[in-house]
Every structure is written in structure tokens, then in C-alpha cells.
Amino acid sequence: MNHFIRKNGRLMAEEVDVEKLAQEYGTPLYVYSAATFRRHFDAFDSAFDGMNHLTCYSVKANGNLSILKLLGEMGAGVDIVSGGELYRALKAGIPGERIVFSGVGKTDEDIRRALDAGILQFNVESLEEMHSIGRVAQDCGKVANVAVRINPDVDPHTHPYISTGMKKNKFGLDLKKSLEAYRYAHEHAALVPTGIDCHIGSQLTSLDPFLEALDKLLAFYKNLQDEGINIKYLDLGGGLGITYDEEEPPHPAEFGKALKEKLAGLPLTLILEPGRVIAGNAGILVFKVLYNKKTELKHFVIVDAAMNDLVRPALYGSFHRIEEVVEQGRAPLSVDVVGGICESTDFLARDREIPAVEHGEYLVAFSAGAYGFTMASQYNARPRAAEVMVDGSNAKLVRKRETYEDLTQLEELF
Ligand code: LLP
Image (cartoon, rainbow, N blue to C red; front, side):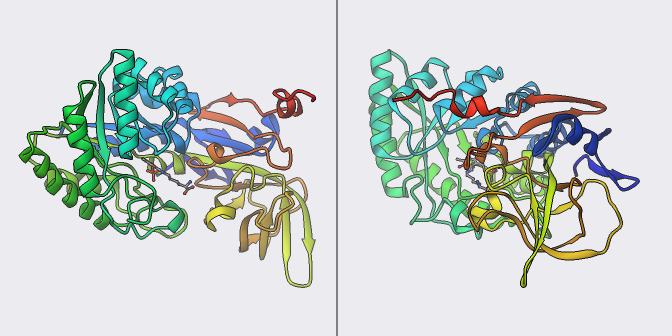
């Protein structure tokens, strides 16, 4: 459920008219609904009521400071994968003890900063990384809490670019190497094994792969206990899918129930790292129709948003529902909705039935709250879009539109 609904054919973001937002702030424009963020976080987090848990929102889905602050105030922790995400999280007021740090490429500097922030746990992805964390922690006179990210070799049945828990992926360690990493950490004076971690992929629409991975983790947990290594946290990552089109992913409540059943009676605190399920349907991208262009084969609707604003269709062939912001009641046509970038992959929709639209009218792409703005770029020297947050009848610009000056401000002439 989200709060982008129609009133008399006009799209509303909560109580705010979306066309008015587009006129006031310009397009392309990301619009977020605070009530939807709250609702999604609450639905997810409360699914684990009755067991010790921490919901660590995945910053990569949407790291806007206002969103991190809103979620942080509701008790969320965060999952980060870079020094930059750590910076954002701390700036938004997320306490270090609610931060877990995943990712295969942590630098010494990232590790140092995370230790300074007193993060809850490093999710370690290689033996060499474990060595580095030990060395850096020792140098700073600190102790690092570590979990090994286990690659359980489970097929998540999702797009190959966003599956992460199979043998062929670069993520985590297999069970044998994981044990080696835990033994190393156990004996290291500056490392404490506190958890066990895995993240198998994104946009999963069935619970089975999660449960298969969890079984493997629990068997491994017993091995660790036999070795005298007692961990406290079980981090199952993110990955729960959402409805873009006709997918029917499990509700967070079903996910919660299934995990609670498997973990009943175990002295473990569950960590989850949801991104898309919180942010995806809490944001839309609004853009303007520039031109209609008919060729022998196609009808192109050329708009002022492009793959630099929302790259998911170009990169994964993803589906985003596209509609008029204000319904005009015209007959539908099959069109390609494309941007102005000089690439043939620059499309937001292909062969899509939408009502005929005219120059100057606004369109909306739904489900753009996750991996929308965070994957935006300035390709073709296009300043990045503005972001607006709506809460009830209030709307606030939470990130200004970039300017042409922003495009060049870090450059110096040779
Ligand atoms: N934890 C880790 C370690 C991750 O790598 C990810 C996502 C998450 C949590 C959050 O997963 P979620 O709950 O959002 O599925 N750009 C792609 C998605 C890439 C996901 C990468 N990792 C897309 O637009 O579909």
C-alpha cells in the first residue's frame, strides 16, 4: 500500500497535487511520500515483533538524508556499503551501534571511520578483508565486531545482475572459507566474531530461497558453536521484492512469520537489511512530455527524464508503470517512452500502452523510490533531478535540482 492515489483523475502524493509539484519544482522530479515510508517500515519491522531484531534499512536503495532521518527516528538501523553511506547515515543521526557495514571493497579508510563510529558489525566478504579489519582495528587500539558474509550458493530466482548468493558471484565466502575466517577472527585480539551474515539477492518474490539460505546458516551456526565460537547476530540481508507490475511477493508479515518459526528458541538477534521493500513504492518520478515522434515502426514519446535519472529499465529491462499525472481520457497507444540521451538503451518503457499524450503534459513512473535517484548520473551533462518529500499536505524540497555550475564545479582547467 502506498499513498500515491488519484482524486478526480489527478494524481496525488498524499494530500498534495502532483501536477502542482511538477509546476513548482520543475521536472524530472522525484517525489517521496513520508507516510508510505513510515507505513512500509512499520509493516516490515513489526513483522518481527516477538523476537529480538534490528531492521537495518539498506542505504543504497535511497540514501536521501530526510529519508534516513525519518527511518532513524522510527528506530531503524542501516546497512551501508561504503564510507560515503557511513557519512550519510551519521549525518542523518543514525547511531553507530545501529549500523552494519557490508560490501566487498572496504578500504582501510572506510574501516577506520566505521571503527571510529563504533558500528555494530562489519559483514566481512573475504579473508583478506578480515586481515585488514584486524590490522586497522589493532592500529587504532579498537576492537571490531565481525560477521562473515556467507555465500550459501542458493538461487534467488531473480535478475542475474542482482543475484548475489550463488557460487559464481563475487559476494561472501563459501562455508569452508567462512570457517577459516571465523577461526582467524576468534584468535585475533582486535576482532570479535559477533554475527553471521548473508544476502542472496534482490527483488525476490518467493520465500523459499530465503528459507533455504537460512537453513544453511543455521547448520553453520551449530558448527561455530562446536568450535566454541558464540555469535549473537544473524543477519539475513535484504531482498524482499515488491510489485512493479504483476509480481506477487510475499507480504513482510509472512516473511516475519516464517523466519520467526525457524529461529524460535535460539539466542539470536535477527538483523534484516531491507531496501526496496521500504523505499520502492514510496517514490515516483515525474517528468514532462517533450515530443511525439512517429516512425514507420514506432511511436516514441520523448520526455525530459532519461536513463541518467532512472537507469533500471536500461540496465535490467525493468518495468515501471507509467501513467499520466492528470488523466485526459484519450485512447491508449503503444509507445516507447524515451529520454533525450544518445543511447538506444535510453528508454523508460518499451511497447507500452498508455493514453496519447501531448507536449507539456506530465507523466509519472511509479515504484521509483528505490534504486532511482541513488543510481542517477550526470551522463550527457544532465544535472540530476530534484527530490521532494511530501507529508500529509506539506511538501518540501529535500534535494535541490543540480545546476549547470554543479556539473563543472569540481573541475579545474589544465
Ligand atoms: N544488503 C545487501 C548486502 C545488499 O547488497 C542489498 C542490495 C540489500 C541489502 C538491499 O536489498 P533489497 O532489500 O533492496 O533488495 N540496483 C538494483 C538492486 C541492487 C541491489 C543490491 N544489493 C535494482 O535496481 O534492482
